[in-house]
Length: 202
Image 1 (cartoon, one colour):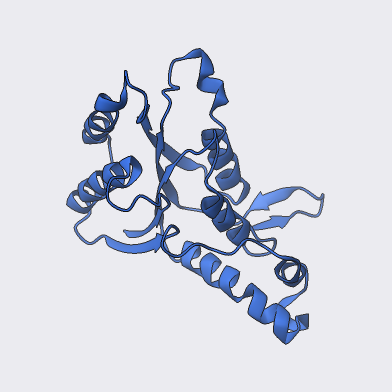
Image 2 (image 1 turned 180 degrees about the horizontal axis):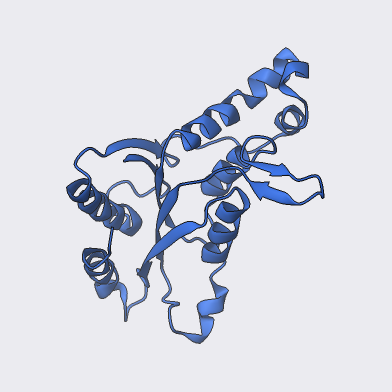
């Protein structure tokens, strides 16, 4: 197994998503002794958001790009190559303000590329080009949402599911660390997520 581990939380030592993802990684290493891990830590190496030059490079055929466009698109090309070179993704992230931290959204913006990770059919429909990959998402949120009237406020999960399907990835599993800051749930949030991992069929 070649695993790409995308870490998002800026809390490098006490992050619930990092703690739970580390436990999940250990379980995967037990299950797959030959597992190799590549770490992309977006908190320590944040990606630049797309600018006009980079977008213009995306919209220009590679052989027609200027030197400036080639340079602007180089990071995106590397990130796409990295994605395609791995068969499993482990994404560990907090949910901020009901959605994705901007550094994780920036990663999606760099790897969602026409001609590389999705294409158009003759009828104009989009089809994903990234196949045979599994994604494990460890998502931590401060306010408990599961099974509550506010569960629909979660914009992280549907975005992740849709954005990954957009490029062709449909095997997506979520491990939730629910209610890490709420006084009634914070003590149990991480232990319950760790226990849930122990029962996962990996």
